[in-house]
Image (tube, rainbow over all chains, first blue to last red; front, top):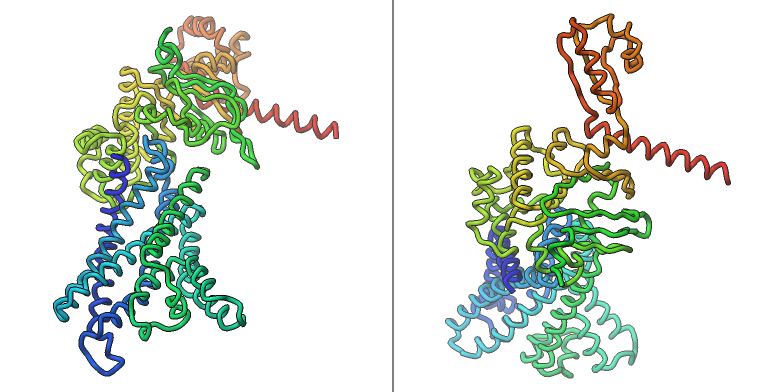
Length: 272
Length: 319
């Protein structure tokens, strides 16, 4: 336990030193406050838009940004240390591979979680101040919690990438492709499936397919509770046959744990 | 029942080999290292030095044979406590560049259960305390190496494995390093020094082992190796000039080089030859130089290559 904490605190301090925490928090805060104020600009009004519009636009932005940031933060976590030789050294210490992995996860996950909380939390405060509606906090706590889990999920996926390659540049390329697949290609493919194959996929089947992508689960968590007028595309259909929030959260949690377990497995098999 | 840890050697390798699909990193090899012993491990790149260290560290498992360190298999779960008592300096390591020297060492110390104070003490010991608040990226090669050594010394390990420890160190720092090794040895620490052949390492090692492409070519104390190799001692007399070439007994040791007065005398005839030389009134000075480690190393390597060449020819002849 002590060893995990030592690794975690080192990783967390690295995040502070590299200004990762500061820049992610700033990005989230600026974007979310901006969206909160100007989200309704399209309809010709400047000012706080409705809560559901705000959260809908925040969610559709976060779903691109959070995975990208998590992958960027963690893709070189292992392969970087392998290249500099410290990974081999660390493994000669009284520290198991699982402990090292968990320590890194706690540290870097902490950066993502804190940045998400502070960044998006600030816009929740602004919204509450403007609307004086306590529903803000309940909706935002769902949003922030799912955003943190989305971030953690992609941190774990980044570890999978970082442990399966031996060069930092390869890990970077793979991380980019992974982001592209989950953020864009997956949804396009779903849409194509929906449009192209007549009576091919049922509503039920579509929802099930969406569970294969943590980004889509995140979308479902946040959009299910909102007016469907703010939501369109494949999602709107999926929402109609939506799963309960609890189910969605546990699926998201699965998307955190599975890649972590996979990464541990690869780490144990890895030759150094 | 007697305590196996006390009687058994600190490190014991029995018929250990490590094979990868495409190459044999280490052929069947046995060795042992006692408490307070310093072993020099010599060989070219790819000779198997690092593989052997990794096996002892438990980072990799042997393909066959048995590795025992402090009474347990280093790659097993039981080796947990052993690891806190082993210090390792890898050959190529660049520490976290963006951290300061003190932060790096504190991190590693924490992982072994020690605190910042311990880290500061070690930095003072290796002589980088003045720069401990600076980022590692500003360090020179020598300072990085010292930082690495400080890292290996964390927690006064019982066993130290040092891969190319003196690379990048200036002569003074090298001397200081060897002093530290001597000091650790007197405290009962066992050390495995792994390197290309280094001048000046002879006085500090108890035994040497020469590796080449995964095979152990020779192992033993330096005196034993010298004897086995039967390398001559170089004796250079001064002031004798022509007299040397008139003495038939001395003439046989003379190099074929016409200008050189150096005699190459087998170890067994050293004293007789010296006495004979001392009998000359004209003798001004005499240098006696036993075969050094580098020559011993060269000898075993060339012998090994010659054997391999023969084998190759034989195989070609058969086919």
